[in-house]
Amino acid sequence: MPESTKRRSVILLSRIAAGDQAAFRGTRRLEVDRTLWRRRVGRDYRILFRLTDEELEVLDIVHRQGLERAVRELT
Image 1: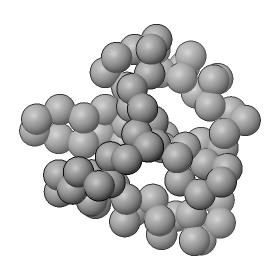
Image 2: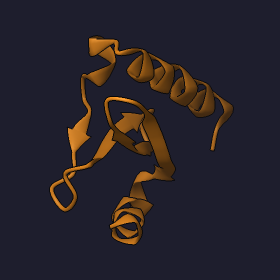
Image 3: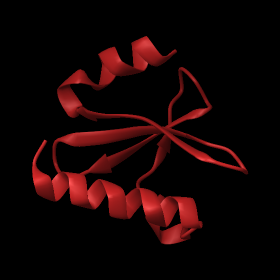
Image 4: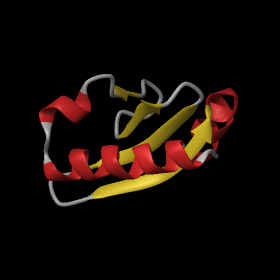
């Protein structure tokens, strides 16, 4: 994964954890498991995470081509 994508991921996840509503723009809930969320980072990577009132659990950062396989493994 490129260094710039790593940096953007950390910044984005920090904003989500802090409750910044603007960071949720583009975030989607997955239909196969409504507790999972995905967020695009850069052009080719996606963050998969769970969000509760108490915590943000980052499950994986995957290349977009491996997204379906990663979701199948998590559900």
